[in-house]
Amino acid sequence: MSDSQVTPDLRRWIAEQSAVGHKPETLLASMLASGWSAPAAEQALDEVLRGRPLAVDQTTGLPAPVPVPDLSAGAGAQVLATMLNPRVVVLGSMLSHDECDELVALARPKLARSETLELTTGSNAVHEARTSHGMFFAREENPLCARIERRIADWFGWPLENGEGLQVLHYGPGAEYKPHYDYFDPAQPGTAPVLRRGGQRVASLVMYLNTPTRGGGTVFPDVHFEVAPVKGNAVFFSYDRAHPATRSLHGGSPVIEGEKWVATKWLRERRFE
Image (cartoon, rainbow, N blue to C red):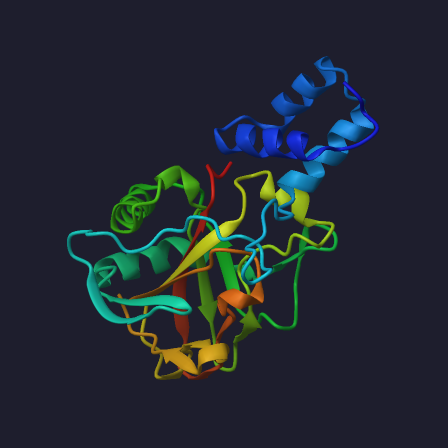
C-alpha cells in the first residue's frame, strides 16, 4: 500500500473503525502492518480524529450534520419551553432540591478557579472570559452522580458512557462566562487529542443548583433568548456540527446579587474515556 498520499478511502476507513469503538493506537498498528509509514498513518489519524469534516452538505456548503441527542419520552420530564433553531429545551424539576443541595455540598471543598481549554495547545488555562470557580466529578463517581447521569441518559436517549463527568461551577457577585461555543473547533491544533477521548461534544445540559437573587441567566445571543436560573430546573441545547451555523453561542450572564451554582453535563459522539 502506498504511503505517499492520505486517500479518501483511508479517511473513510478510519472514521468507520473509530465509530465502532476501535482506539487510535489500534488503528495505527493496523495501518503500520498494512505498509503505511508512521508519518503518513499519524497524519491520517490526526486529520480524521481531530474532527475535520468528512462530508459536506451540498445545499449549504456546511459540514454535514451528525446525530445528536434530543428529549425522549423520559418519565418525569417537565418541558417548560422549546426552541427548534437552535435546539433548546428548558426543563422543570430536572433535579430535586435535596439533590441540588447534596451536589453543592460534595463539590464545595474541591472548588478551584475555572479554566478553559486552549485549543491552540490542547491544555487548560485560566481565562478572563470565565470568572467562576469549579470542579469535575468523574463519571458515576458517587451514587448521586450515577443517579443523575442515568436520568440524563434515559431522558435524552443517549448512552451514559458517551457523557463527560458532571462539572459543578460556582459564580459569586459579578462572575460570568462570556458567550462561547461548547464544541471543539476542529481547525485548532490542540483539538486532536481532545477528540480522541470521545469525539465531538454534541449537546450540553446546564442544571441550576440554586436560584440567584438577581442575574445569572443563560443567554443565547444569536436568538436573543435567556433562560432564568431556577433551582432544580435545567436548559438543554444540542449542536449537530462544529460550526456557528448551529446558533449554539451561549453564555452565563453576570450574577448581580447573591450567588449561582450550576452543574453541567456535556454529551459526546462516542464513549468518553
